[in-house]
Amino acid sequence: RCLLPLTSHKRVSEEEHEIILQAMTCGNIADRDTIQEMLREKQKKQGHRLSLVYNLAKEVQSRSAPPARPPRVPSAGDMGGRRPPGTLLKVPAVDTAITKSTPALQQICEEEEEEYEEEEGRPNAMERKSSSLNQEQMRA
Image 1 (cartoon, rainbow, N blue to C red):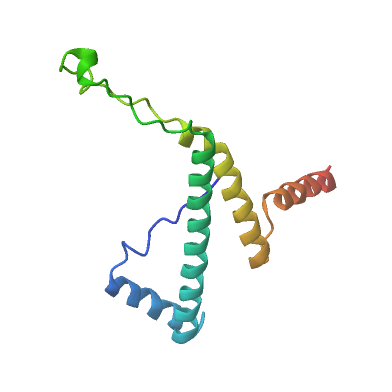
Image 2: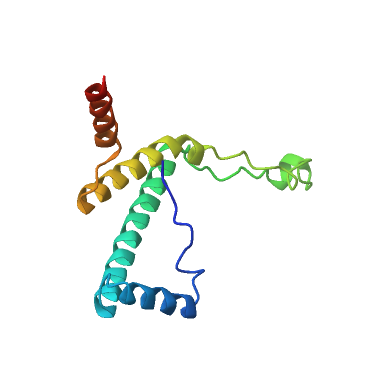
């Protein structure tokens, strides 16, 4: 499952950003320059991940979508100069390519989460499950 942050950088005001930075420096988490550098790296990494997922979604959609054909417009001789009824009111078919690719995108997101957790040195979901199973076995 992909978890989104509770807030985004777009919703944090400059004042809130400064308050957060000050709290982090006062809490001896890191100095201001280090925090700013880490934020820039994190934003760059997130932007790269989002663009990869977006490009993959476009590719999956283009592969699963039927080839687009321009609609045939009858000539004036076919209809006596009139348009066929309903031509202007025709509703396009619902494109389900996105919904078909949702499981694939979910899997990618989960894999990226696991990679991120490995990079950060945190146990991933499988390691947490096996760890809790081991603890239960030791208690029994």
